[in-house]
Length: 204
Image 1 (cartoon, rainbow, N blue to C red):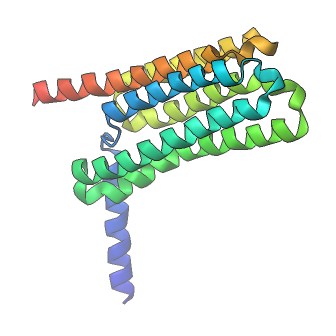
Image 2 (cartoon, rainbow, N blue to C red):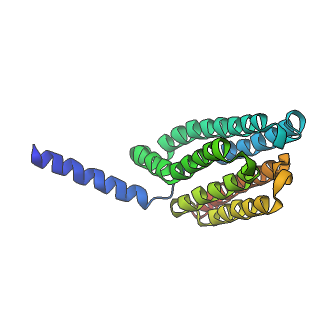
Image 3 (cartoon, rainbow, N blue to C red):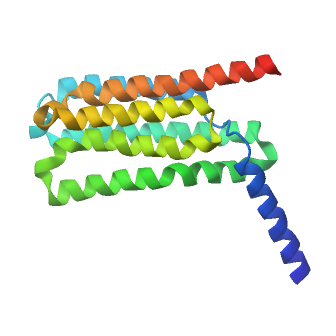
């Protein structure tokens, strides 16, 4: 029995090593382009429903958290289906690896939001910039098993996050401070994935 457990452990270790050395193909360009549209729609909704977000922070948070949840759910379903098709035998390891790379940044974003809302509401204007900076860290963390040009997407979110923080005060709550960075950023990610997929097909 001990030999069996040892053999199973070695097989599991080999599969993890294979997953770490394989480029992840679970993200689909069409789905990520759809999340780009979600971001722009959310910005339009905020412009109409929460014009002065500093005085309607609950509405602001509702709009953007709901957008993030819907986008994450759509992406999660698509990643599961696509990974089953693209990575077959390694699908479980690849999905686990993808989650492990992005989960810390997602958890950090949630915790920072809770702390600022509950303890220091006076600096909530920093949230848009912080969300983008944290998202950039998730992208950078995932870059090691994504196409190399994906670094550009991480740099984009880091830059837009710094700009959002630099705006300061009420200006940081503009609908387009969130809409443009995530709308353009997700479209950039989709474009990179589409371009690298076409390159791989051409080389193949």
